[in-house]
Amino acid sequence: MNRIDPPPPQHQRLARSALAAPEIRSERMFHGIAVSAGVAIGPVFGTTEPEAVITRQKIHASDTGAESARLDAAIAQSQKQLAKLRARLAVLPEESQAEIAPLIDAYIRMLGPSRLVRGVRQRIQETLLSAESAVMKEAAAIGDAIMAQAEPSLSAEDLAGLRRRSDEIREIARRLVRNLTRSPFRSFAGLPEGSILVAEALRPADAALLDPSRLAAVVTEEGGADGHTAVMLRALGVPAVLGVAGLAHAAEPGDIAVVDGIVGTVVLNPAPLTLTAARKAVTAFARERQRYSRLRRLPAVTLDGTAIELQANLELPVELPLIVQAGAVGIGLLRTEFLFMNRETIPDEATQTESYRTIVEAMHGDPVTIRVLDWGGEKEIEALNMAGVVPEIADTNPALGLRGIRLLLRQPQLLETQFAAILRASMAGPVRVLLPMVTTVGEVRATREIYERVARRLRRRGERIPEKLPPLGIMIETPGAALSADALALEADFFSIGTNDLTAYTLAVDRAESVVAMLYDPTHPAVLRLVQFATEAALRMRMPVAICGELAASPKLTPLLLGLGVRSLSMNASAVPKVKQMIRSVQIDACVRFARRVMEQGDTERIRAMVDGFGRGD
Image 1 (cartoon, rainbow, N blue to C red):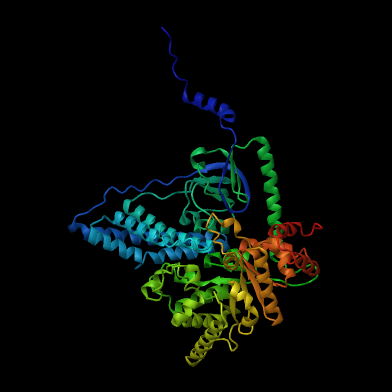
Image 2 (cartoon, rainbow, N blue to C red; image 1 turned 30 degrees about the horizontal axis):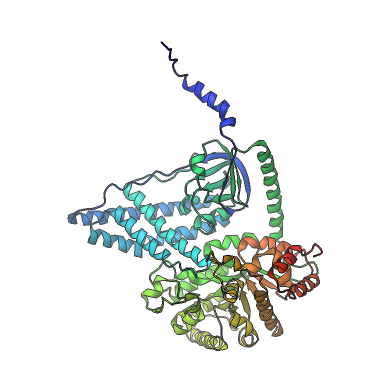
């Protein structure tokens, strides 16, 4: 009879597994989306959030009053939690506080008499759903309705905006449901210093709880570069990679990981050679960040003393700290669409004035270019729909439909309110006003007439506005506008060349359409010639001209743009330091000669090769 030995004691089993771990747990690499630059090495700390289980779907008609009371209690509790969370932001760096606080404030407002809350109450009363079921159903319906607006012609920025709006609704619903079901929230109390936080998902409210001084990096299985969580992690300065499929299940607490927030990779249980390379990368990145930190305080001036205006684009107020950190001298494009989102009424003059004034004051005297509402037929905004402003919302071809200045001139009350708010806010600092999607001289003239009429009305009302009105400029983002730039320059005070839309319209390519996305190329000779034509038209009139979009954000293309005569660039904040470094390494004469050679070319491949070879004798 065979003898069966008893199993060894637990401590012996653990010891044996620990000794065998280097052989069993070999190096594995995972890929994700790089959202916050940096390289980190540290032990994995996993965190999960218990699932909120909804046990009751339906209720009796007699229970609607009690269920509504439960909802009221959950709303009140959620408001208290968010207020407490906002108070805890004091432990974070000042720039991080400024990044996260506005989003928490938005969450608190959404717990008021919002579309979500009204819809939940209606579902409780009319469909006899429990409060938690009603919250989930209504949030899903609103979120799906928002994402249903994602037409193929939407730009990447607009699509990201839709995702953020949908995520905000779902985040508030998640908090309400957890409070209704009394489910615990995620805790970071046991997070060891220097560890790498690994989670399936990380919500913006979770990110607000993180202490960047204790973290080495953050990795999640879900999420992307455009969400609120990504923006917050960048503000915290923590290396982060999101969308890393399978990592949370593959990693075990204590595993060593290497996180590269520059290329978007995570190496689990790195081999000795990988660890050596990672340590060198950590040192190199620290030196690079130190170099860029010094650049922040240095002017954007070429080697031969030509000053370049280097500004940042701003889509949401929460991005303001990123602009300050990057060393930009002003906002070259403030997108005002954020003011009209997630609300059922059009923001009035006072609301808009306060929002613009806050941003202008935050720039401490640096100029702010405010673009009026750029809303097109392919996008839906609830406040405009409910006000009956956009009855033609379903254009057959929205990219060519009622959008930009076309919509505003058809609905002048929108434009007048926005002009009044901008003019009042301009007392707080230097402001410029930008008109989107201009294609004709008549549009500029009609808009300027409204602009000056609003100014006269404000003065009669006793409002303080600048004696000399802020400059009124136009976006050059269609071939028609570029080719008629000489005529438009007689009517506008400045140009801002939007190279993203200009490329799409010139090449008839939707970069969101995978079949033709490879044809989207801002270095195409046709695009560059339109940029050159519009720039030269502005320079002949001695008026400012700026580039915003992908061309402005690429350091490789900076010499070409300077050679074409551009002296103002506006881009996403993260691109500012690298572009500034390029500016400070070139001479204008060399850039002019280089641009002349490039503009003689008719082949995109040749242009790319020349751009890559600049400064190397090519």
